[in-house]
Length: 242
Ligand SMILES: Nc1ncnc2c1ncn2[C@@H]1O[C@H](COP(=O)(O)OP(=O)(O)O)[C@@H](O)[C@H]1O
Ligand SMILES: [Mg+2]
Image 1 (tube, rainbow, N blue to C red):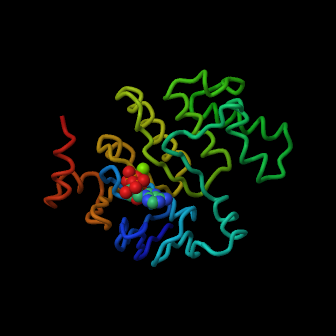
Image 2: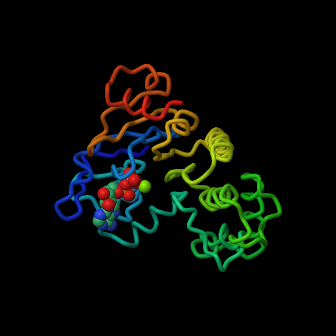
């Protein structure tokens, strides 16, 4: 379980998060919807401890994120897989080296075991045999798949997805949504995906939250979200339909 409690975050005099409360159940995929610039990436960074909140706390499996203890924070991050918005692959490394980097740096697995695990994760994301390619040889959709394989490499208990379909054409976006949905069903990692794309949100989320003006103003299942009379949610959905 991930519990976000009363999180506030400002940069200078710009308050981005004004008291965010949200609980993500074990094995659940929560999608946080919100407009560009509303603080979605900031919120994910607060969950994984790349940023520290001004006030409030995040509990991961009941344990407060140890913002001021680098060693403990590093260990906590080991339970997370993260798909970054811009895939964030190292161009000089092969696909296989990118996927295996976390295993090489954070585990005692030997080269053969890492290679076996990398192959397995690439197979899981539909990139069987791609381990010797370089990122420059990949399409946008393939880069997202490599990012997913890397997020899965450490068999994480928790997965964070930052804008998983941004920058992809609608067809490839749909393919990535299906892949994420399949992975979520298969591994049941407790997950948060942030996006401004309602089609993606409805496809991959068990529940949907709307982040608006620094707060969560709606939480509900996909069906509840489609049916809600909350005007902020209705406006958000109408703004993107068609
Ligand atoms: N490290 C930072 N320093 C100053 N401002 C930041 C920083 N990170 C994010 N912001 C600001 O916080 C707001 C929310 O950003 P972000 O979380 O990236 O939005 P999005 O919802 O599009 O992911 C933006 O106005 C952004 O400029
Ligand atoms: Mg963002």
